[in-house]
Image (tube, rainbow, N blue to C red; front, side, top):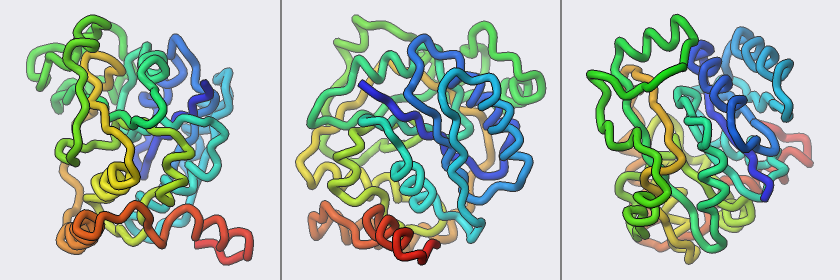
Length: 270
């Protein structure tokens, strides 16, 4: 199975550097690593170039002009460029355990998409990692939240992973799906501007399309670097868009990947 790893980022080069470092230290390599960049400055491009120079797989910089928080658009561009048949999606503030890609490959099943868990690193530990770039040893120290998510076990994963119908707990900082399924629902909805709910709305359309959500436990571990909360000024409008999709049981969005591909072929890129 060919896996495309997509890492989202925006102007946090230090976090992206350690995220890419973990991506290049996997026991099973992805087909490619695509950095979905929502308009970062040139110093982010330098981090990506340095990672690409030492990588044994392609590291692709998918950049778009900075016009505010447009995560859906950035992800759609990256999915459109992906050559893999399975997409693993993380954020640029995520450090991946070395078996991360292997675990997702073993978990993937037709008709399913996967929601993974995360370990929340405290502020002091996050700063230490960012300042030193040292990721050796255990991250599960004092002050780390939800330490149970540090445990990787095939047996526990088999026992405690479960199917779920709703959108509660959706976090696309550790999320996986088949590329053809994303295309079938037209990818992420680009009507979402600003932080919040674009991941839940995408999940709602996957569920409405007939896919099954699997919550993966004790496998595909990731560690989330501490940061302050994002600006949530667009949340009310994004909640409205989500509610429309849920109430009308939509599995397709008008402003998605297909619209983008048509626009790019006609020379009207956004």
